[in-house]
Image (cartoon, rainbow, N blue to C red):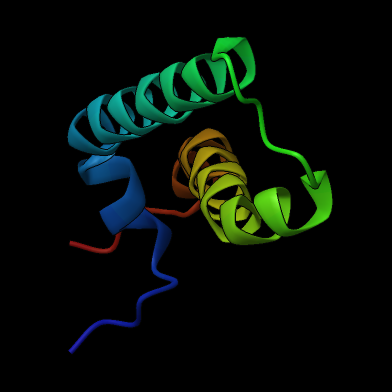
Length: 80
């Protein structure tokens, strides 16, 4: 059994996670572009961004983990 924080798994699946992160980023930016350029933009921004906050936070967390996982995996000695 492995822990969710094991960086070797983050590094191993970095290609798939990077594609997913890119697609999610594209989708959320496109959504915001549509919302703010429409005829009726969001009237109150606090509730608007409260609902979007978890998505933005998750993307930041996954991006950080992808960037730092390589460094931490390379520092570990191989124990085969």
